[in-house]
Every structure is written in C-alpha cells, then in structure tokens.
Amino acid sequence: MNDTVKYVLDESRIPKHWYNIVADLPAPPAAVLHPGTRQPIGPGDLAPLFPMELILQEVSQEREIEIPGPVRAVYRQWRPSPLFRARRLEQALGTPARIYYKYEGVSPAGSHKPNTAVAQAFYNKEAGVKRLTTETGAGQWGSSLAFAGQVFGLEVKVFMVRVSYDQKPYRRALMETYGARCVPSPSPETRSGQAILAQRADHPGSLGIAISEAVEVAATDDDAKYALGSVLNHVLMHQTIIGQEAIAQLEMADDYPDVVIGCAGGGSNFAGIAFPFIGAKLRGGPGVRVIAVEPAACPTLTRGRYAYDFGDTGHLTPLVKMHTLGSGFTPPGFHAGGLRYHGMAPLVSHCLDLGLMEARAYRQNEVFAAGVQFARAEGIVPAPEANHAVKCAIDEALACKSEGRARTILFNLSGHGHFDMQAYTDFFSGSLQDQAYDEEELETALAALPVAT
Image (cartoon, rainbow, N blue to C red; front, top):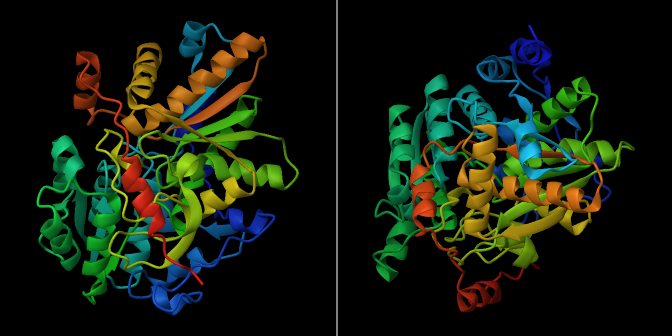
C-alpha cells in the first residue's frame, strides 16, 4: 500500500482542531455592528439566528477550537481529502514548477462545503433546533447543508438564487434527494422576496436577496436557525481543515508551497486552504505568496470598497467591514454561481488590507479554457468556481517557465463540475459570454453604503 492510500485511510490524520487565524493576526479585525444602533454587537444579538456554540466560535480569540467527535466521525467518510501532484499538467505546460492540488470534490456533495455544513448541523442539533434555513448560489452549499441536515435529523429549507435555480436543475435535484426543500429566490414566501418581485417580476436573484429571505424565515420561527455557507468567521474556521491537511501531506512529499491559490466568492474555500499557511508564516514559518482569485464580473476584492456594509440586500444582517460592491449590487448571471456575492468575508478582507495576500480577477471564458486544459491533463472536471484557481495556477506555472525558476504551487480544487456540464457545453459551442457588470449599477450600490458611525 503506497503512502497516499495509507494517508487517505488513516483517520488519525484528520485534524482534531479547527484553526482560528484571529489569534495570529498583527491587528484585530473590525468590530461587527448592530444594524440599528451601529454599535458593536454582543453574543445575544446573534442568538435569534445561531446556536450559542457557533456564536462563541464567531467571536473566539483562541488559536484552536476542538472538533467534536461526532463531526469527525462524519468527516471520516471523505477526509482526509487527497492532495495530488499535477504531473501531467506540469508536462503539458512544460513548466519547471511543481503543481499540487487539494481535491475537495470527494465529499458526498462534491465540494468543500460539507466541512462546515456538518459542523453547523451538529451544533444546531445539540441546541435543540428542528429546522435550518439558508441560501445558495450554485447549489454546492445548499446540497451540503441538505446532506448534513439529513445526517443529524434536521429539516432544511434552501433559497436558491433564481438564475442558478434555472441553470442548475441537477443541483436542485440533489438537495431534494437529501430531503431539503429548494425555493427559487426571490420568492413570494417572504416579505423580502415580495418586495423584490414587486419591483421586477423576473428578477434573476442574488445571494444578498436569498440571504435576506433565509434570515427572515429563521428570525420568525422559534424552532429554526439560519446557516451560512461562507463569509462568517466560524464558517472560515471550519474550512481550515483543508489547509491543515495540506501542510501534513506536503510534509510527506518533503515539499512546501511558494504560492497558495484559492478561488474566492464569500471566502470559505480560499480561507480553508490559505489561512493555515498564512498563520504559519505569521508565527515565523516559511514565506508564501497567497492569491485569491475572483470573477471579473463580480470583482469584490479587486474593485470593491473596503467599508462597512450589510451582508444581505434586505438589510436584516449586522454590518461588517469587508470588501464590497454594495448590498444592492446584482452580479451578472455567469456560471460560477458560488462566486456571485457582493461582499467578501471580513477576515479575508482584513488579510488583504494587511498585505498578507493578493487578489486577481479573470473573465469567464478564460477560466473555462483553463478548466478544460486541466481536465484533459488530470482527468477531473472542475466546478466553474474552481476553474478560477486552476487558471491562476496555470499562469503562475507559466511564469515559472518564462523565468526558468522552479516553484511549488498549491491550489484548492474546491469541487467537481459534474452538475455544471451545461456550462461546459456552452463553452464548447461558443455561446459562453464574458459578461460584464453594470458600472452605473455598481456606482449606485457603492453610493448607498451605510454610514457606520
């Protein structure tokens, strides 16, 4: 039995703790503000939406949070996820770079999202919650929470962004297979949705709108709580199991990355791969470049403003300081639905502001071209979101080739594209468009940013 197989089968190699980067940052992140008073919130302000254990994780300053046994027991189904050396891609590129990818598509839902979905479902079950509400873009988060809800006996209601609801029927079917109810958003089932539909009956939806609907339902049901698939501190913390495993796996290969790459929409898979490496560097470890990659049609990090904003369109959520395009901004309907969010995780935004990472944006067709090149070399079809990381890794490898320098490149292949083949069909037919956001709409959304103090 080779080392890779032994590693995958050895459950003792599943990390026992999640990593909290807040403990190592040179400056603390900005406070979260109450949407009404604009004063820092306390744990009690979040209690209508989250169980107390998750609230305590959200505000924790501890470097490590123990992973509960029942959560690790579910993780055993697919963790540790494999780390692969992309040797055939290296050969195709003719690069001296060593390219590794951490493959999260082996989870039951096909992406990294169950890492936090399982944890959130567990803590809600322990708190006596009966139902969870959430939003989803491409459907990876919705299907992951549906899976986790089934594991722990919780009802799940998912508000799916309308354009993705129409584009990705198989993701919707997967959620329903796991027992969740999937509703296109904006919907007539909430006041938030009704208000949007009154303005535009055929609104394509956005993650900000879907969040408003899910939060509204949770806040008005004593037996329900809200679950978020990205952005918040505790969600990013749960994902750090990815980077921790990658560090241990690279030690087996006697290697360490010079560059770490992840796609970024809300920030969860990016933080999952990158934060453990940034933390190691902050504690005196090896230097590493860290790159977050986003779509040019929703350029939160590369075009957004670092300011306080609402996490949702209906302004029901607290104010957080983040890179944002404005809560009223509706991104174009490109296929990487998981990256169509107006804001970026506050911790990721803070790391960019501190100069601990870089940000890069690509257009839709060029990332699909990279995904096809990767699939033809490595045999795995990436999700549209993950194609952004693939494109950046290829660019970095080609830079090594032009410079005649060997570097180690690690990226997170956050999920497979098996439910996204229509997007690849559109690419091959030439009908996939490089959609651009409306500059006037963006300026209007940025002009409406709330005054935080």
